[in-house]
Every structure is written in structure tokens, then in C-alpha cells.
Image (cartoon, rainbow, N blue to C red; front, side, top):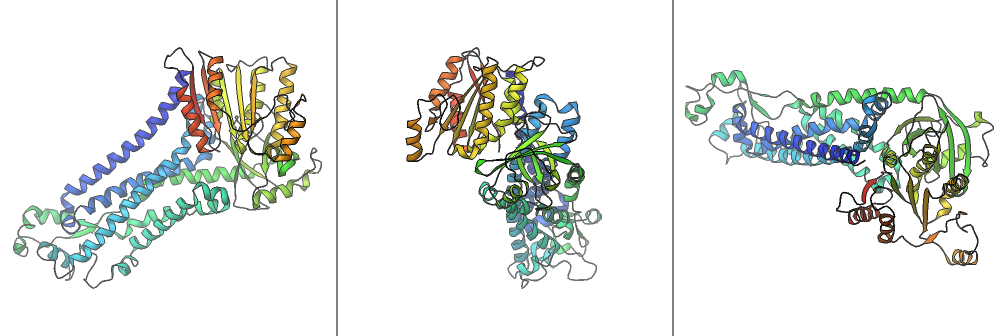
Length: 566
């Protein structure tokens, strides 16, 4: 158990450190190459150190743009994961976890793009100043090259009176640079958690501006504004001598010739673009696969349960799928956590009407809580996935603490069902022998379907004499006076008045110190997995609890924290 956890954590650390190391190596290597390369000596005379800053950040930008497309090709990855033995066990779980690497690489793109833009703004000002009356000596001579026939220019700003902004917006590099910058701003701002929660459609559509970003990136260097001395010119023009003997240029130093370097960004992104194209082909193939809706159940509080079947569909607890309804939108794909267990002959999702798209889907698929009778009246659905599998680590610990807050309870539906199947089928060996489940909820009425699931599991486990296996604790953090009076009136009844379960609901927030102390005391020499899905503030508290109550003795109790993104 310890080995698997160390492997997973080590892979994450190695991945991040490798990414940082490669970025640092590329930046330093490119920076010093441009600082020392002989063909760019005259360019450095005009631009100074900002030349190296611009070129080094450009190489790092290209590298990160190559990486950013790899997690986007998740359909190809999931296809490989499902068909290849190379993606089994901890490697498979790590592959899903490292899809979060996408965000880290995006930050790298922003940082390098900012450095690149600022450096080029300084370059533009240096070019402009080099044409001013104050410029003299070698700077002035280099800037005037190109004014006569058979000469090539080094300075793209040809006169001091040139408007640099106008000049910038009339070049390929300037126009594409502006498009790339605007696209990057739109993508990053629409990717914030606030925007995704308020308007997922805005995030979805704006994120596809990355197509404009990559097209602009591929042709950005075609203008070849930053120029260096050609190899043929270096053979005739002894640059180490001529730069210090400007008066002998006509006699002993042929006029130097310059050219721009070939654009290289397209070489960096060609491979990932091909992978992305394959991903789109796979998504189109999956879109064409038939999805059969076997049952529609309308739960209270506007929650719709869809049970579906699809050929060769394989899932793991905690995974999610992307669903498209062409009759609502031909472009939008929305993620939903799977709430069925892998052992069931169908897969299901629970969809709460919380926006235009989900409301339209619930309206199109709504039923009266009974099995489907007229499947021809239901809209066609396309399902892509499944993706993600972090919760499968639950089965690799002898004891697991599963903690959900609000809507974060959804991934645990499939998990609890799967726990039942894996641990109570005669032919299945299950390492897990105790599960503590915590659910912190403001309004349990919004997730009554989950309380029904707990009630079903509670009944089954009691019938099998395994009631001790699952210990669940539900905490209600929001109620009014009428609810409080009703709760107090029926407190002595066998079933909880809120959930209908035998275990009474707690009111208020959990005392995590007390909970972790109790679990640590009950399992003094165990490795305990802590799995959480919910807000970041609570995640930090649980991480601190795991560190605080893990024993320094290798033979003692150890808590291992895992967070499920939702």
C-alpha cells in the first residue's frame, strides 16, 4: 500500500520537477546562445539583452504550447488506457491525475508570453531609437543599412518618424501577436472557477479560441522581424574586426547581409495537433455510437436520473462522462459524474437542473419516476468517456474515509455501490474492510436520491450481517425554525426524520479533530486513505488533519490524503 502511494506521489513530483527543469534548461540555453552567437552580434548592438529575453521566452512558450494540447487529447488517452495493459494499476490512476497538469502548463504559457511581449516592446523601442538623430556610430550605420540597392536591412523601423504602433499592426508578427494575446486573455479569464460556475457555456465556447491561438502561433514568426547575419556574409565580413573599424567598412569590410530565421513554432506543435486531430476523429466515432436510454427517473428537487447502455462501455468508480444532446446544442458537451457501479449492466448519471442546457435536457427527458415506456420520444444523446479514476484508490487501503460536501457527494454514489459489489461477492477479494463516510450538506432535499441510495445499502448490509462495514455520518448545516421543531418532535423515532436512515443526522459542522482522533484510535496501525470532494477551504483543513494525526512511527497509523476534482 505504502509503495503504491509513494509511486503515485513520486510520479507527480517527478512530472512537475521535470517540467520546471526543461523550461529552465530551454530558457538558459537559448538565452546564452543568443548572447554569444556571432551571427546576432549586430542585432545585439541594436537591441541589447532584450533580444535574448525575447527569444528564450519564445522557445519556452513553444514548449509549453506543445504540452498544453496533450491533456486535451484525453479521448485518445482514455482509448489507450482502456485497451492497453501499459495503462493499468497505479500508472492508469496517475495518468488521470496528471490531466490537472494542463492548468500548470497554462500558467507557464502566460508567464512566458508576458516575458516575450514585454521584451519585444523594448525591442521595438530600441529599433525606433536607433533611427533617431541621437544615434551615432555603429548603431546609426546598422540602422541605415537597406537604404541603397543590394543591401539588406537589419532595423525594420526605417525612419525615426515611423509610428511604431502602426508599423506593428501592419506586420505579420504584429497582427498574429495581437491575436495570440487576445485569445490567451479570453481563454484564461473564462477558465476561472467563477466563470465556469456561473456560465459553463461561456467557458466552453471561449476555450475553443485556442484554435485561433495555435494558428496565430504557427505563422507568428513568418514575418522574420528579428534578423541576423547570414552565414555567407559572415565568411566575407569579419565581424570581430569590422565592428570596431567602422571607417574601413567600404575598403576592407563588405557590407553585411541579414535575413530572418525560419519560424519554428509549427515544429513544436505539429505532433500534438496531429494527436488532437485524432482525438476529434475518436470523439466523432464515439458520437456516432448508439446510446440507449433504458430508464428515466425524476427525483425531487429537479434531479433527473438517466440510465443508459452503450456498446463496450467500461467504467470505474468516480469517473465522469461528457454528454451531448444534439437537439439542444450540436456543440456543447457537459461533464457528469457516473453514479452507477461498474458491476451493473448499465451506466447512470444524476443531472440537476441548474442552467439553460440542463433545464432543457430535464424537460426533454422528464418522467414520473417510473421505467421508460416510450423510448422513441426521448432525445438522442451522445456519450464520450469515461474519464478520471482517482477514487479507485479507495480499494487499496484497509480503511478509507470518504468525505463529501454538497454536490461533491455525486462521485461517491458509484463508489459506495462498487464497494458493496466488490466486498460481498464470493469470488472477489477485497482489501478494504472499513469505510467511514461523511456528508456535509446544506440542503439534503436537493440530493434525496443519495439518501435513498444510503438507505438501500444500509438495508442490504444489515441483511448480510455486515452493518459495521459502512459507518456514515451526515451533517446538516442549514435549517429553519420549522425544521428544527419538526426534528425535535420526532427525535425519538427509530428512523431519522430528515433522511429516513437509522443513523441520526448531525446538525452543524463536524469537529474534525474529534473525528480523526476516533478513527486513529480505532485503527492504530493502519494506512487510512482520506478521499474528499468539495470546496478548497475544507480541503486544506483535511490535509492538515492528515498530517497532524499521522504517526511518526512507521508502525503507527498514517492518513493519506486524496482530493477528487469535481
